[in-house]
Length: 329
Ligand code: SF4
Image (cartoon, rainbow, N blue to C red; front, side, top):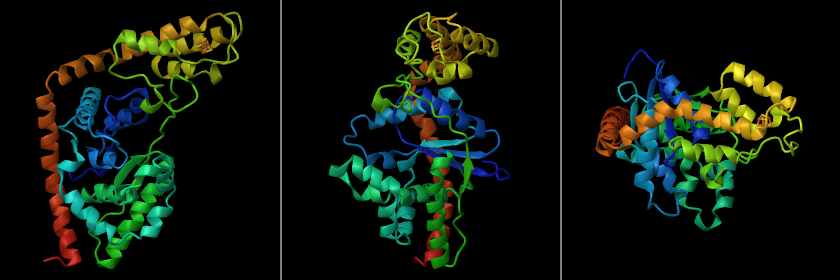
């Protein structure tokens, strides 16, 4: 860690193999931030437990996510990459912060209400305390910034409130109020062209899929709904395939697709084939690296354990200040 750089923390739930939405929405940003900041990236397995019905795939999902992160360019030499539960100081800070967080505020949060609505049979204690655990995550490592989309602003503001309550009650400034590092998170639509890309909706395109699987998925993508026949002019501005071309195709290709779509000079089938080809070309290096990384899971576990070891050093230093501020023996 470089003491001259500001510190960034981000946690990602272990959702297994990552998809294009994760890549464009988060992973790309994680990689870019490494150049300018001291980054701490955490796979938040404890957070995942709040909504999981079974932990059968948890270990594998953690590994699959780590393979994707590392293959995409997350560099353990530059950043700390680790698994949340490997730092026991986190649960200690979570407990202490829970004493300065009012229950009514937690149960009033829209995110809690939404989760409670989605899993009425499992409104567990962890679900209520989720924002406290998140605050502990950020403050344990003295992170100054948290990269989030603007929709996450209330969560960071709530974390700042918890920190202020703690610092005020114990007359200290040992915990840092985190700031948002607002990132422009593109809304990546799924193959249905309507909903945000996500595994639960089965509208995703996996980064680690084979070129053939990728092409099959791309061919199912919904395009301009008004374009019924090949001879109908299309409207690229409402077409999700065109949005993806803008990310993965050359400016010349984007220009000609836009023109040819409007004049019915190109059909959707050919347009999608071109997108699949360009996407596969873009991901070829990533996939090669991922295959090599996934063939050596022990090395990835070593990377995660080394990351946790470095994270624990920072965590313990923070906890010594916290325990002293609280007045523990
Ligand atoms: Fe979309 Fe391409 Fe079809 Fe136009 S030609 S509607 S941009 S898929």
